Image 1 (cartoon, rainbow, N blue to C red):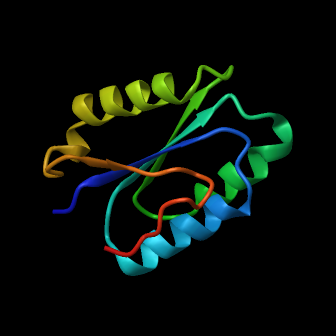
Image 2: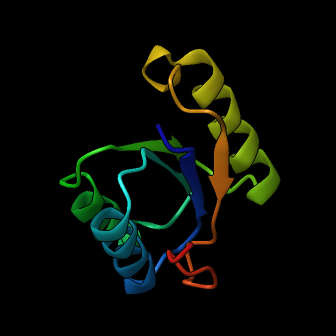
Length: 102
C-alpha cells in the first residue's frame, strides 16, 4: 500500500482538479483533502472531487490556516481504520506546485 496524500485547500482553482486527476491516473493512493474555509464560490471544485474514488474531503467552516488543516488531516489519518495499511502520508499543495510524478 502507498502513502496517503494530504492536500490542504483554500479557495482552490481548477489546478486542484487537475492535480487529483493526475494522481488518480498515475497512482493508487488514498487522498485526504481539507477544505480550509473556502468561500461558496469554490464549493463546485469540492463537489467535483467527491466523485473521485479514494478521496475523503474534510471541512473547516472558517479558514484556520495550512498548519491547522494539516493537523486535522493527520488526526483523521491516524484515527481512521481505513488508513491502517497506509505506511504514512505525503503532503501536496492544491495550487499545482507539486507534480504527481515520482
